Length: 253
Length: 164
Picture 1 (cartoon, each protein chain N blue to C red):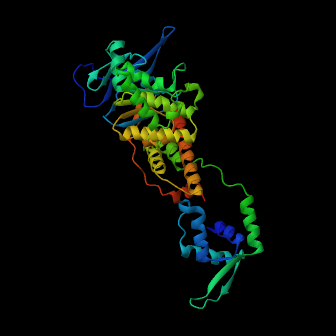
Picture 2: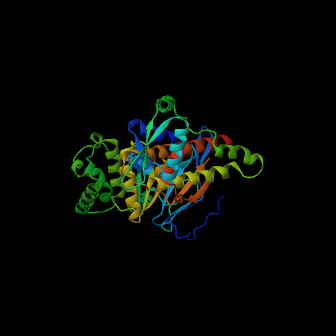
Picture 3: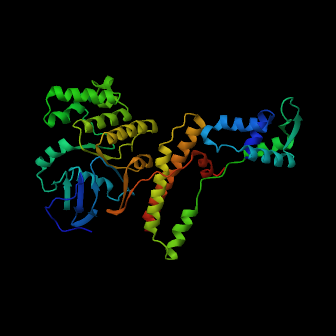
């Protein structure tokens, strides 16, 4: 599965992995959570990762997002090999080009909604005025302007996830990584988040997300199925015409 | 088609075309657009079975129309239908049979079957997600189909874990 390490430029993919392995060691025993994964995400492409619990989906996403180091293999972002960068270098690159959304929102609880959304822009070197303008735009777009001064804890789960999305999109990343972004939401909040993801996709930003939710996965251009830490399937999602009237047949009437 | 027609006639007597309109209005896109011929055939059979009876009503400018009403036996049949629990969820469907038998016959691997079925479900889901239904019955029906598909996909994962 894994190819020899190389420093030559990979394909034009926005993100690409080659023979990626993530190994955990505990008490002298090593367990491979990700076992030689080769995947690519094109510019502006929407890719969903599905698979049973324990298949390595979240681990893979965390490694791609630089939250955990890879054990072996290569990660390329925008034609640059990033798995060998220092943590600081990788963090700078990530701030500019990658947004991350988690299942449990992970907002900073001691900061206001506005500050949560402005922080990534400020860290990436935007002036306070630019960060503020971008924050105002995003919160308005997500229908959250009125909540700008609130603490995250005072918001509903759906609102917190929208704030988390605003934060992830603050620097207009070319790649949005999301780990079960609707995993903790009811159906109406899920719809809001889906709309936002669709809009992000329509604006040409690439999305790589892990999900169990078939509605989310079915929006993607391509679905990767991960099984036992390896890619079991990688295929485009094609709309299959299915007249509503035949739903009745599905239910056996 | 039998029970829906009986249920509509329980409300008030009607002729075939009125029943077609009533079905369309009640279910919107959620019901296969009823074919008028099919409605007439079903009404005729219901009459033969003694569940409805008809009366010719004269019309001055058009041919007579048949107005149907429910009989006592029809009302009883309808009551039985409503009181019976409806069939449970689909289990042991065609895919399951394939999944078990095809690998035994050396025709396809389980992973391959599961992958192609998952793609199919996701494709249907993509289509359902793109449908907008303004009327409540249709919306609820679509939501039901989405939930069924989600369960089917979760079950495929279980098959993958247990069989592959």
